[in-house]
Image (cartoon, rainbow, N blue to C red; front, side, top):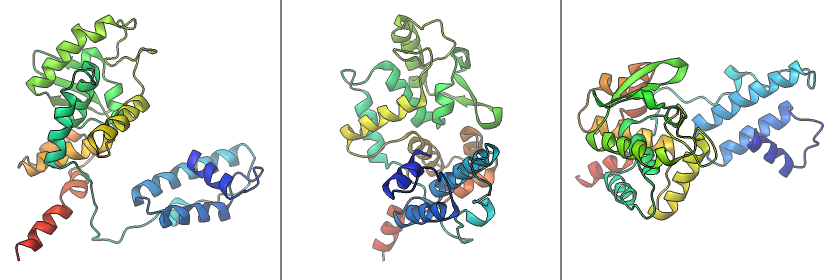
Length: 264
């Protein structure tokens, strides 16, 4: 919504006209012209449809300017779905960076490890509770979309980080009695935007862009490259269907295509 409003402000559209068919169509074309990902554009269209419904309910506009079936950007059947993931070299570089205790707190190191080694969504991450960590079985219980619960096995180094964080930094927080695992200096629960902001800062140091979903993509992609079967990846990622996992991750990377051509 902020992006749409900023676009209207830049085009000097009258503020008493919050949404119209004309402004929506022009904004959609603006997103296409600036090479936004199709998935991103469609998410924005979904949000604007909800906004349109809200304005109608309040009597501010009288029409439905947006129809999801008509206005969503369609991808031709058979088109490749490109998923960006970190290369093995970038993963190693990130891991080395997380080892720098002068720059990285134990909490943030644990966040990095969980995103990279469990593939949790950022919303799932900040909603982890202390009771969700089972040290006896080395598993983490995650509450995903629609309240679905899944269990993820943890590497030994991740379990060790959990122990270090809960016995050290977390115990020293004034919010240590909170049921949530990750705390901030000002709240009893870490906000997902704080995770995104931290990764943005890390990006500047390591020299490549990082965001939570990129690490989730990296987690799934690395599992499949190492021969883990699709059903197991599906369960670990918490996708609704195996087909969704296949759609996102059964693909050939640009690098692999280039290497194939070089062999000719």
